Length: 250
Image 1 (cartoon, rainbow, N blue to C red):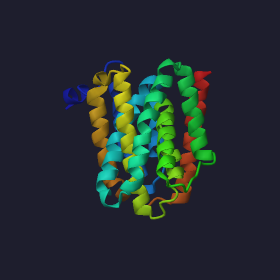
Image 2 (tube, helix red, strand yellow):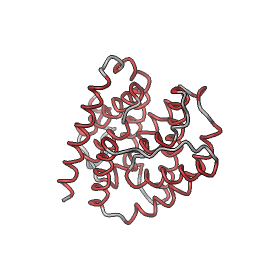
Image 3 (cartoon, one colour):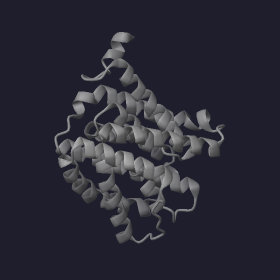
Image 4 (cartoon, rainbow, N blue to C red):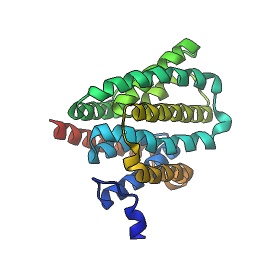
């Protein structure tokens, strides 16, 4: 068993860190599935805590693919394709442009931006729009993809821009599909820019499987938690992690 797990551990990481990342993929996916709450934010925070931001961001895209694609598949009947397609198309140029910015950004600035976005995500006002016109959705998709390439996470932004979808099931399904499209675009752009996913392939595969499993069982694991108290605890935890990242960068 130990020999099998050692195959998952990439060069430069130890077994305990790899195990923590796999478990984190499971529980952060369960967090989103159960409470529609910040699983992607939590995962990028954990990844950045253990890895340079320039590695954490592309790895986050692959790991989140398991969570988002699983949620989109399980809720595929509720996807609002008439909105999703325009948003996804806008994400293509947004991801390409964001990738060009990401390649020259120093790791310290990367980490500071991720920390700032963590603080904004849990304490700041969220952008909101009820504009469902194709050109607006295309622009929103480009903006969200651009942000995602630089700091790894755009879920809170996408949530605000989908406020016009009032049915909760349709909202969750469409949001999951849009994030899946962004994950795919992010992976392809980072491959084009020369990031070697192969070096982390076994660990990423384990995290994708764990993410899908977390999505599947997340509701059963977390649905009894008092949501209000949990949201406050989540904000405090993300604030502490952001403060540590800022301290390490400075």
